[in-house]
Length: 340
Length: 249
Ligand code: SF4
Ligand code: SF4
Ligand code: SF4
Ligand code: SF4
Image (cartoon, rainbow over all chains, first blue to last red; front, side, top):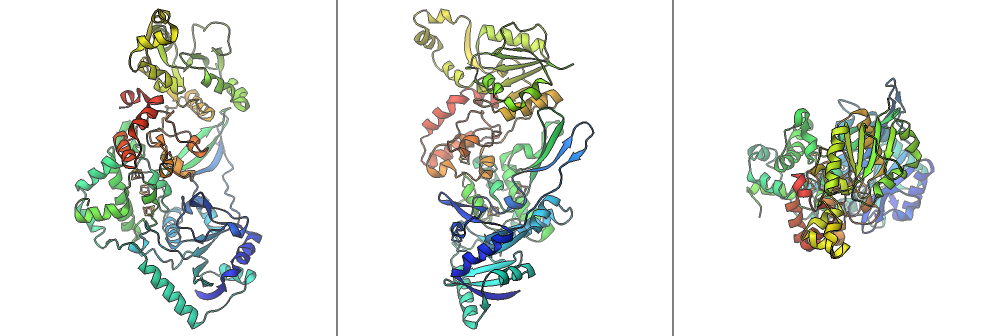
C-alpha cells in the first residue's frame, strides 16, 4: 500500500476518468435516503451519504438473479454464462468493504460461485471515509476501518483527499486520470487527526467482549422469547444486511412449458419456510427460535468457521426493522439478562 | 390429451377473468396446452359435464354457489381459485359482518332478502371445498397466474408464499411508508407480487391476504407505538381480510 494526496476539486475528474472504460456506480439520493446507482454525472454522487438502503451486495449477488435457462425436453442448459462488464464501485464505506470480504468467504472459497466471482472480478472498489451515524456500531467489531478489500480508499481531509492505494490497477487508473502528489508529514498528521476524531464520534461502545461465550451461556434465555413475540418474521433484516447471503432457487417454466429459467432469490432465516423440510417438519417453527438463529449464525456459527462475526455494524437492520430489534439491543440484553 | 379446463365466476366483478385476457402475449401459448371447454366471461354455452381443471373466481354468496362448488369438486381433478374474492372472501366478505338481512334490504329494497334467495354469508371458496391452487390478489397478477397454472399443469404442489411483504419491498429499495408516517399493510400481507403497489408509490392494501408468518398482534402493537390509529389499521385490513384470521390459523 502507498499513499497519495489529491485536491478535493479533482474528484469529478477522477469519476469522469473511470467512466471512460467503466460503469461507475456510487451513492445517489433517493428522497431522504441513498442508494447505489449508476452515475452519469459526477454531480449526482453523494459522498456525504450516511448509509444506503441496500448494501453493495446487490451488485454481486442480486436479489433476483437468473442463473440459467433450460430446455425441458432434454434438460439442456442454455444461457448460463455470466456477463460482467467492468465497473467501478465508487464511495464504499469501510463497513461495506469489510462485508464484501465476509461474503467472499462464502462465495469464493470452498465452492466458487461463478456468478459472484465474475462480478467481483470485474469491479474495482473505491472506498470513502465516513462519519458514523447513530445506528453505526462497526467499531464494536473492528470493521470501522478497511485495511484491504479496496483498490483505492479516499479519506476526506476537507480540502483534499488522503488516498490509500491498495492495488496496481487502482494505482494505474489514479495515475491516468488525475493529478496527485506525494504525501507530506502535514498530510499524515491530518489523516491521523481525522481518523482519531472519527473514532470519538461513535454513539456508544457496545461491549462484545463476552461473545460468543455469552451466546453459549444464553441459549435458553427468556430474552429470545421476548424477541420472538415482537419479531414480525418479515425478513427485512436479512434483505438489507450486507453480510446475509442465504438464497432460494426457483425454476419457472415459460408459458409454452418448453423452456424454463432457474433463478436465485434472497432468502431469510426469519421465514418459517426457510427451515421447513419434507413431511411438513420444521426445525425452527417458533419466531423465537428463528430470531435466535440469526444471532447464533452471525455471532457464533460463522465466527467458529472464519474467525470473524458475520456482522459489520452497518446498522441497516436496525433502521429496517419495524419491531426495532437491533443487534445492539440483543447483545446488551443478553449481557444484562433482560431488556432495560 | 390436453387437460379440459373450465373457468367460472361466483360473486365478483369478473376482474380476474378480465386479467386472463390481459395475458395477450402468452395467451396463445397457454391455449395451446389446454382444452378450454368453458369460460364464463367469453362463452355463451353451458358448462360441460366433465372437465379436469376448474378455475374459479369470486366469493361464495349463495347456496347455489355452495352446490355448484360441491359438484365442481366432485368432477374436477384440480381446483384453482383466482383473485381476492375467491381466495380470502375479499371485499364481498365485508358484507357478512353485521346484519346481512338488513344490508340486502338496503340494496334490493323491502323484499330484498327474498330476491337474494339462498344467500349465505360471503366466504372464500376454501370454506366450502378443498382448493389445490391459489392465485391471490385484487386483481390477480397475470405472471403469477401463469406460474401457478404451470405448476398445476406440471402436477407440482401449490406454493403459497408464507412471509409478509416487507422483505421483497426492501429488495426494491422502497422507502418504507411507516417511516413516512403512512399506514402500510405490508407487515401483514403475504408476499408474491413483488411489492408492486409500494414500488409504484402506494401503501400495501393487503389484497393478497394474511401472510401465514405474519405476527398480527405484534404488528398492531408496533403500529400503535409508532403513533398510528390502530382502528384505522384494522378497518383497512378488513377490506380484504375480514375472514382471513379464521382461515389462516
Ligand atoms: S446484522 Fe445488521 S448491523 Fe450487522 S451487518 Fe447485518 S445489517 Fe449491518
Ligand atoms: S442464516 Fe439468517 S442470519 Fe445467517 S446469513 Fe442466512 S439469512 Fe443471514
Ligand atoms: S426485520 Fe425485525 S421484525 Fe423483521 S424479521 Fe428481522 S428482526 Fe424480525
Ligand atoms: S412500505 Fe410497507 S411493505 Fe414496504 S417495508 Fe414498509 S411496511 Fe413493509
